[in-house]
Length: 82
Length: 222
Image (tube, rainbow over all chains, first blue to last red):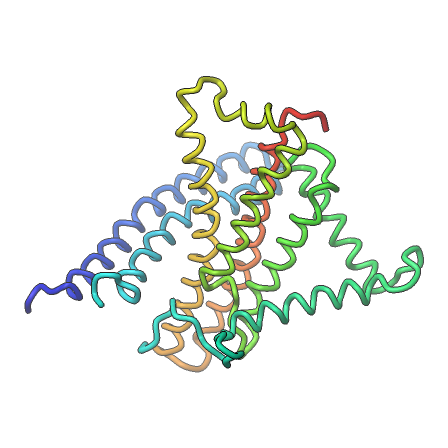
């Protein structure tokens, strides 16, 4: 198989999504573990913690979404693939 | 998957202007919001009941949230922030209706909202602090930070835009993939997840907008 721009784009998209998922996964694990710890210590603050946790998780997840956007741009709106 | 998820879905042509499904949805949401407010607050406001009471609860809840975030009187900022939240919630949830495309799943709407937020940050900041002190906060604590401050001013708005667009668009995309894999019942749990994502992303966009505005007016007397 020749290595033209389409094949390279697909490989790039796969690498972007796979490596882009690693960081947010580790970060979300740490965030949830810390929140669990905090709720176990101080159950009465669970409401505030859960709200902050959700916002924080969504912001961490955004990093993975950035990679997904790059991958979709490579696949569907590649400026070099004509 | 022949069609790109990034291409607009043109519904009809208005003269030389192509009108996409997202634009029609945006106008429908605007009409619904305005009609709801007109209907609820028609006549005597002191004797508002039913719908009026519900909307008052919504506005009060938004005001208390904004007050918690900004730690100052929320009412000058509520027209912008509350409208953002209500519009984004309806726009993100409109994905659930068949035949309706959520406007936030295309880059134009998040970009427009992010530009609105960008200019209102500076508007509120200059109005609260005055032009001189507001510009001076870019060179504090040292003028060395000026380029970083300007870059962060742009990148945080850009990431605000990409965050909303990427989340909603990727969710639409996931549903499309699942629907092509297995047709009938499998997409339903993903659509339930979509409700959560839509509301959380609307909340995050609004919270970040109010955090940015709160940081811009910080230091001025409340």
